[in-house]
Every structure is written in structure tokens, then in C-alpha cells.
Length: 379
Ligand SMILES: Cc1ncc(COP(=O)(O)O)c(C=O)c1O
Image (cartoon, helix red, strand yellow):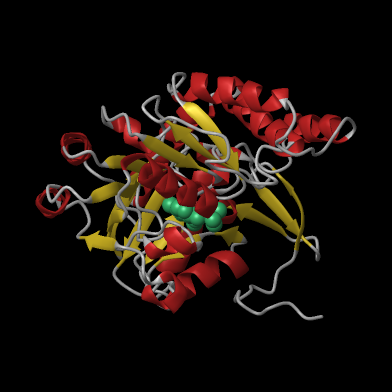
């Protein structure tokens, strides 16, 4: 059987990884400034993470959600404490899209409405409701196209108000920092106003922190640069440092009933052990603070790069927009300088390294960028 061919691949096979370094099958070492799409939070193969998963594997890996799994509550307690949402409830699932799907469903079950507002260039995942809220027609199949979703210009509060005031909007879904769309940070005032309009009109505010959460922004959640307390917050990516897990943080206004939401694998023993180890390490190693400090250093150091149009983002979620197509620049970083990075659109380099990187790693990246940009080829 061959693999269904949906991913364009680099001709590199990672076989081992430690911290922010990846080794490929030829023994070549790479620096990871992408974290496999923002997934690696505490660093690859962290010893505490390995220990927690191995210990759990030696006890029990899985049983269904029909029995007590105390690790779920331990994880919820730790997440509540570190995120500043101890009064919220946690629903555990397996991926970001699934977290958003459940968030949309929860909102709709509760206010009995079906329309959703999302923002232009948003990405919320590829399952039915999540992809309908994603502003990319090329990944929306006809089957997904019949949800009632209105896309509003990014951060346009007046357009959002006009629509929400019609009184039929179940939820507004917005990324803590728009990631795939190019690293755009909403202004705190915009979020505060959006929250107020939602509240006045019985609309729920869903903050998708799947990419921007778990310390990446230099706060536990990116929206915590503002004073908003969303009704629902979705998480995944950095939550498991590579172990598939997602979650929905649910405000106390929501009531549950048996069967309302569910999943076979969500909240399994192994995933909870992994996710709990991630939070322990984030706390012990002050990784949220590290993301803020090293991220600021990275943003500052990027400012004089040749051909740079704009640096966007906060913490270790940084977009460097250049005046030219960065396809070759990314290839040069990877193949000449052995550094993984990502992209948004044609011109923006997307940097989402493990939260444990240091200023020396940033210096290595900047030196590589300068070396490439000062040759005329890429710029
Ligand atoms: C903001 C955001 N939401 C949702 C998702 C979907 O997550 P997953 O790929 O785990 O389904 C992503 C993935 O890139 C994302 O960046």
C-alpha cells in the first residue's frame, strides 16, 4: 500500500531529536526553529517527558472514558493553575481541529444558534465545522460548505458589531494570534470590545489558542495580553509536545450532560501523562518567561535584516515578512545552514521554535539569515 500523497516533503528524515536539535538519517544536525508547526513546546525528547510517558506505559496506556482516569483531573488541575483558569472545565480530545469542532458544538448546543463568525485568513483546522471557519476555499469540500459562517475582515470591530447585533450568531471564533494567516496579533482593545459585543448579544467568544497558547506568546495564552476571559478556549499543539492531545477549556456558564460531547481516545492515560509532564516542565523551567525574553531578543535582532518589511508577533511566535518571495531563503536556511523554519504566504518566514531555545540559538539563526541575505541570490 502506498501513502496517500497529500504532503510535499523535504528530502530529510529526522531519526532523533534533543532539545532544539534534530538529527537526520545521515547524521546531519539541524536547528529547529519551527517545532514541527509549533508543536514542540518543552523541547524534543525532554528527559522528564520521556520518563513520564515510559512510566505510564509500564502501568496502563489506555482505557475508555467509561472508568475513572485520575490523570485527567491531575492534568486539569495543573492546567487550571498555570493558565489562570482554575474555575473552567476541561474536555479532552485528540487534535486542534477536534477541539474547535467541540467548541463550536458546545456554543451551538447552549445558545441554540448555528451561525458562526470567523475572520479573513483564519485557520481553525480541517474537520467539518473547523474547516468551514477556515478562510481557504481550496481545502473546503462541498460537504463542508453549508455551514453558516460569515468571514469578517481581520480585526474589523465595526463589521463584527454589525453582524453580531443581528442576534443570530452562536459564536465568534478567533485565533489568539493569527498563525497560518501570517502572524497577526489582535490589539487588546479589539478583543475587549469584541468580548463586550458578544456578551451583550448572547454570542459566545471562542479563543483558538491551538498555535498561540501554552506559553508560546510569552504569556500562557496570547489573549492574556488583554483582559478578556473567553467563554471557550481551545488548545492542542504544544499541549503534548508531540503526543497527540487537544483540549477545550469551558467557562462555568456552560452546563454539561452525559453524551453531550465524547471521543474514544481523548484523555487517555498516555496522553494525560505526556501533557502533565509538559506542564510540569513549563513551570519548572520558566518556559513562558523564556519565550517572552528570547522572543523579544529575536524580534529585536531581526529588525536590521536586509529586505525585511516587517517583524510581527510576540514571544516565540514570530513572522518576518520580507519584500520578496522567501521560498529560496527557506531552502537556503534548511540545506545550507541546517535550520528548520516555516512560512506564511509567499513572503513571510514563520518562526515557532521550542520554548526552551536561548539567545545563542537566535544568534545562530540571525547569522545564517544575514549570510544568505547579504548574497544577492535570495534578496
Ligand atoms: C490556530 C489553529 N487552529 C487549529 C489548528 C488545527 O489543529 P490540528 O492540525 O491539530 O487539527 C491549527 C493547526 O495548524 C491552528 O494553527
